[in-house]
Length: 209
Length: 78
Picture 1 (cartoon, helix red, strand yellow):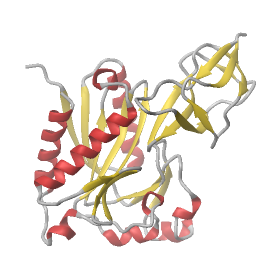
Picture 2 (picture 1 turned 90 degrees about the vertical axis):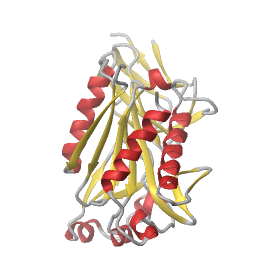
Picture 3 (picture 1 turned 180 degrees about the vertical axis):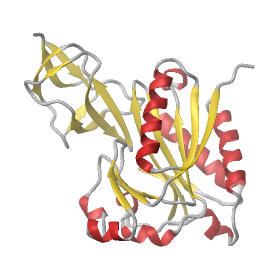
């Protein structure tokens, strides 16, 4: 059977290095390589999307950086978000020429994967019309923001598995007045990152045949 | 003169915000060069120069909304 997706796990990788590797991977997929699904985690970093409102940073930049959190402007949609160890980053580098050239449909598929993932871990989550991302009650648990070049996607999902949630106090996540939560907080016990990754692969393979 | 058009981005998407231009008016551009980015629904879409030449005009500036199928700017052949 032809392999429809290559899965790579980069482990803990600096954001800037991860971004460069993403761009290289995007180029390979543009040139005909099969889709890639990439996992990684990043050291604490705030990424400012293309539509970031300056008021979404709740502290001065140097105060944030003194806490060991770097700040980077990025070419994805959306406002500010935080990445840190314990948050599983999923970068689908997918060729939408094969899956449908429709940004809205792609984003909805990402949300469906996210909701199904959490359901598999006994967490009832929802997507909210007009607010990309996935919520449990009023709290946000998974952030979504993507970039697209030549209809090949990059950036993706930040799944809060066991993130230090206190770091989100530095920002208005995604420009919203919401609290963030994690799978570990909701379950009340550690959640296996390995199990989460395995389920993510299964769900992406199902949705993006 | 070649128009830079905001392409179809998906069903029901009728407009997008121009997040940034990567070239300035009067700058030379090559075909396929990343020329601007349109953002919709938390997705940022890179638009490329459709032809080589000089970026002659920008009709939809950063932060402004363009309509799908509409002209964002023009490129003049050199």
